[in-house]
Image (cartoon, rainbow, N blue to C red; front, side, top):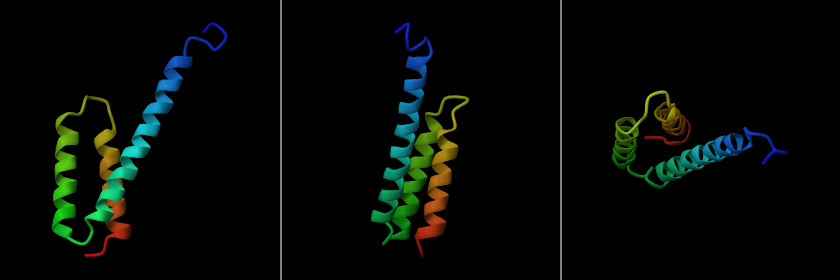
Length: 81
């Protein structure tokens, strides 16, 4: 631990959090593609996901904002009503 420094564990944890965020974004996009045959189902899925993300959000986190960006990007670029 002395060779790697004190902040090594924090940096490793930050990298893992970023990786989990990327995986969450991919799962959301994949779920939207699975549901894309029915726009109503896609919108209901996105609403419930957004509601839960904002309900349990801690102050200072950007999870809900990034989740909204993923939903918005996938919906505008790839899902055609």
